[in-house]
Image (cartoon, rainbow, N blue to C red; front, side, top):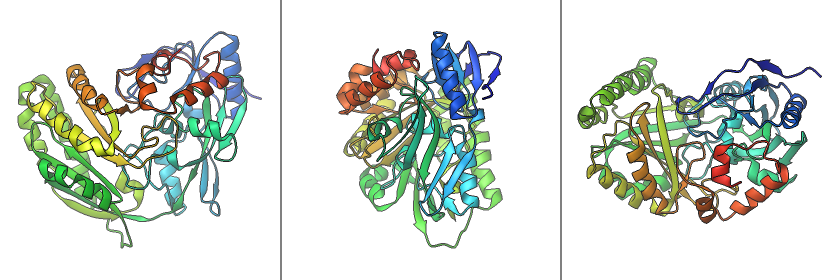
Length: 439
């Protein structure tokens, strides 16, 4: 067996630039056996080991001073089973490549988030999700996992095989082992009719339950310092396909949502007093539009403006109250917020540490331009959400610890008990996991 490809050590940074790590060595195993050998050697050398993806987490969940496992050696699509409706891919496959490969075969995931640069393993391990009335996170679409554990064992798990591992490892935070492959449920490709339109804040709040119930996928963005929102409703369509014209798509998604917005954020950072005025202009920049296309071209969008983010999942029935309090908090403060607040929904699922575990949820995400002062704003948001038993997104900024999580996750002890079995020596430990899971 050939050894995993090694790379000279250098500082690893995440996409936002707020997390850095300097490992002893960096390797890119190209098979489960190579990955197992990497883990056994790390343990023998007294080092920790962590797998990284594309770095889209805002927390240090993947940071290590030991062995950094890069994703670029595990990028194969292993199999596609049309009869079973499944695809098995290796952990380092990026979602953009998976989406394109599935579409070429006339297939699709049922739901997805809006960022395609993430690796499969990175996206599921931190609980990446989109918005959906009936369809849940990417992790909820998994039918089987291949996991390499601390002792070098290669475990396969599913609802029928090692179900206790399957329940936890679908959103495992990198604490139970290193994922080497994932099997997703897929379906024949379908069309989504997208309807995006501005709407006043009070109307969105009054109609929130109806909008979330009557549409397969509903989300909205509220622009702080204004009463303006942009709503998005995506529903399955019989067609015909009517994609956005190329020029309109470029103007909206590249020029306005990235290029002009980048300039507006930079101006706001230099002159915070200008932000409310900029927000009023930004909130009116995107006009209503409708189009119909295959799922990943509707669900996903380019994100080139770099930021830091906090997101909390609250019980869906608490969403409107939480969002109203957030708006009131911003209005009576001297915060200057250039990014819109994003709100999405998800049905309850059965994953141990999913933010939607056991309850229908609404997600409230707040952002700040990279390099801006975010602490006071995020602290205020966190207070609002934790008062409503909010669960922070595992890959986004928060200050919660294991004591808090024991109170909002009924199955928390189930996860930590499994961790004790699979990684008693804490090969996969780091400061972040010590804080959120305990010792």
